[in-house]
Amino acid sequence: MDSSPECSLYVHIPFCASKCDYCDFFSLAKGSSVAPGYVRALVNEARWYASACSVERWKTIYIGGGTPSLLEPESIESLIQGLVEASGSRFPPGEITLEVNPQSLTEGKLTAAKNSGVTRLSMGIQSLCDNALKSVHRNCSSKKALEALELVNSKWNGSLNLDVMAGLPGQSRDEYLNSVEKILSWNADHISLYTLTIEDGTPLARRIEHGEFWDEDEADAQWMLGRDLVEKAGFKQYEVSNFAKKGFESRHNLAYWRQENYIGIGAGATGTVYSFDGEPHALRWTDTTDISRYTDFWLSTDTASERDMTRDEKDLPRDVENLDAETLEFEFLMMALRTLEGVSEDEYRRRYTRAGWNGNLSERLGENGLWKKYTDKGMTTPVKDGRYALNKKGILFLNSFLRELI
Image (cartoon, rainbow, N blue to C red; front, top):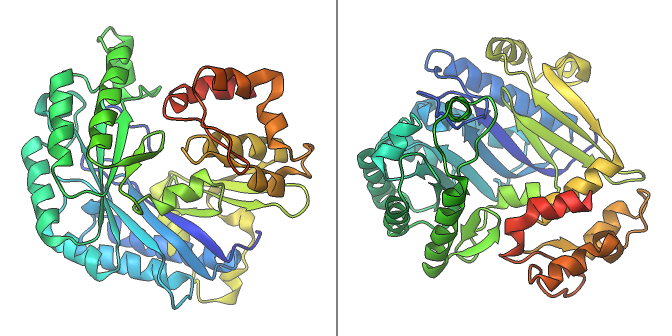
């Protein structure tokens, strides 16, 4: 594998008390009996990739799921300590995020997060409307969410992101806006504001296929009204669904949007390591979703031994995809244009001058008059210092723009 002295680390905890009807992430409604072994396996995998990719320091660590807060306090501490030590660096990551569910967050787990160096919590509130939460079988209540917020407010001094979702079944516009206003009254410095997406194969998708009514236009209208409230509260939108107080943008997510290397570990996790020396290419992998296979493999790996640290990559329990320059070039534009900072001509030229393009971003975006078309509609920001970006109106039509860009 190509070396990556500094990269981000995503860690997947696939356990949930129950699975929400809209969720298409890999997760299982179990976990307490297998979690300790799974945590040890994660640390072993992190050590292997740190060695294989010559990682000197994790830029960021993001522990997501699933529901990481289902882990017991001692598992949280041992996991994070092991992950930080895996790179061998004396310097901690610039950001360590732990996703938590209000239903499973306790003072003990919060203390474990603080003691182990977590700098940022991401709490999935979604709604304070109990009818909406019940409608998607979300394992939480408004009462429990408010209790968790009170706990965090009194015991946590790090950064805090809160997730909010528009368009949930059983949630009126007024109930949604009331949820947003209440959530904004807490001391968060980052808000992730989502619109419910109906993903194929989920229980919610099947319900709608069988005739349950869901109003996509109403969901979009709720989101835009929610955006107004969030911005009035002092948050600045910096990506399609993300808003932050100044200086509190998610460093880990920015790594994705800026096409930086990230290691993904854990059952179902994806990672990508890029190379821009010569013809651009990348290796992308997804770990097996068979938790028994995953855990057995990584627990059998003695990561301190030279034999296992140099083992053939084809033995790893994962699926691998080799990405070519054309795929990477489009992904670079797709991800960068999700953000309000947009795409830099210098970065585009550095990556893709040798990839069959002449490195001229204005020509690439201007093919068939595309950029001018969106500019004339008031959907772009003025080009400055070679940076091209859609504005707040434009990113609402990002998918349409990308379809025309292909």
